[in-house]
Image 1: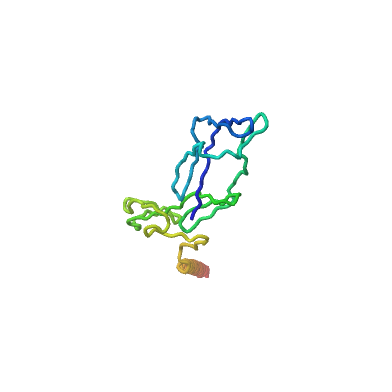
Image 2 (image 1 turned 90 degrees about the vertical axis):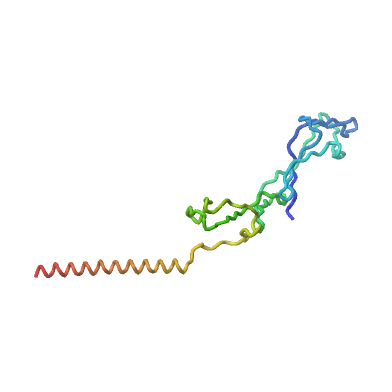
Amino acid sequence: MPPRTILHIPQTGTVTFKEDGSVDKITLDDDADGLNFSYDDNGTTGTANVGLDDINFDGLSSYNDPATADVIGDKVSLQDFNVDSSGRIYGILSNGDLQLLGQIATSQFNNPGGLDKVGGSLYSASSNSGDPVEGAPGDNGSGSLSVGSLEMSNVDLSEEFTSMIEAQRGFQANARVITTSDSILEELVNLKRQ
């Protein structure tokens, strides 16, 4: 199951402490009544607000003036990425977590034969092919992904070798015709001299 991703949306505010060092009150500069988060739960994204009253600040304390509070943590960077057979692209972060980065989509057409060739093994939609119907790999009969594999050439190698041999033989035959014509002309010149 893909991981759930929750990120805090940056906010600033003021934390007031009691004389014993415990938290007295927290006010946010944007007048929000809680901390804002964005989430991605298996492709469902949105934002959420967690009220300040619902958060336990018992671990936050201050014993010296002036009092400051800051969230300290390691900066996380993308180390590698991974694609699964359903087309989901996951980032492998420096802290070991997985982050869903995106989704590869596939398209189907009512008339694949109506696609326009644009070169380089690429095709584009046309009025003859119909509109693309997008989906995830493997959904509703669309193509599938082979993860970690390398696709071979999309040409028939035996046919290409045959064409190359035919072209080579044709060149050799043409070269012999030129050589034969040259020999005949040379013989004609020699006959005229005699």
